[in-house]
Length: 504
Image 1: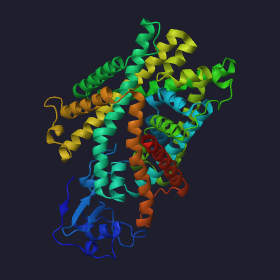
Image 2 (image 1 turned 60 degrees about the horizontal axis):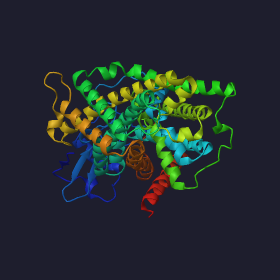
Image 3 (image 1 turned 30 degrees about the vertical axis):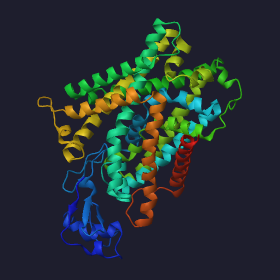
Image 4 (image 1 turned 135 degrees about the vertical axis):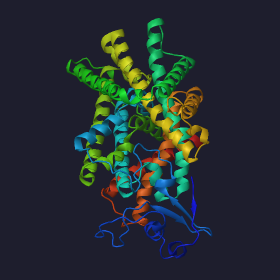
């Protein structure tokens, strides 16, 4: 992260009366970027579209240009002044499809067991899934306003820098590279290894209830090695097969819902719905916090909804509709999927399994069903891991070129032109979490605490900006009740987790 010294202090940095970020941008922005024509109807100062700039009131004034000096950890490309403006081609239907497809992943085929085990009952589990959807929904809505107010690439990293200070953004970037991305990859690899091992042990042993952790770690490690080789050797594979892998996971999800309700129509439901649905509900509040973290893992991807804003037609009108429609769709799909699991499987089976899709298929169709559903989830996990390695290795490569990491990680393969050193670093970090992460549940809890702590700060930044810069132009504005709901739930979850770890 580079800071550019200013030889002469501007009035904004020396005057106590002009302390807002907008005033700093107006007084110092012209030194860093040319003015562009603008309509001054809504901006009487006529500042135009310049990069947003931060200044600190220190003896030596420093300026941090968020768009130039911060590391882009988002999916969108930079949009500096003078760059080609992306054509607005995404309508309502396209936007909903992108957001829904980005959220449906391996989590819904692995997290239900953790949620049921922590919640203790069928009814409590379904409430946890609904609350997880509400958290993701309110978070996505808040991010949409932040994206419209701070139209910079990088997502949460850019918002944290603008709302608080560049050091907060810097810490988030480092956490993303060293913890969040590798831990997320490790979770997917562990799910992949567990599904394949479950298939193997079911076929070769009479009791496959206790698969050794070393077997799961070996398969997960092999998957990491294979994906790393593919990303270096055949970089186009990730984009070519993305549609295929997305189709497979959506087909698996829809199949579970359909089969579950067919079972209901035939009257052959499991004991989960033959007894009171709240029997066995956990009385421990901390257990619900852990259950919510497991549910939120399945909703992972909600924070990327606002990345399509720059390419969306009429974003002020369509973006809220995209978020509300897509989040409603995903929440209902996940609720129906969990209902289907409980219609077919007993509560104890759901609570004790991380490979719930395999158990679902085996109960309905025997060993053939187990193979089909497990194969679909395994293919989905491998595709997700391949896509994650493809994008994350380029994040590490960009970090090496920008000086966040040693420059060797910014080097490309001399023949293939792929970030080989960055891919190796990512493989090492991911393998570390696979081997020493403590298994699926520990990894999910670890990842969730790290990521949602920053999400909490990011959404809180929306409140900070409404106070510090009430006249900041926003094409999308979220109702306060959405922000309040998100922050209160997150504060409670983080507080309960912290309390459970401190309790002797």
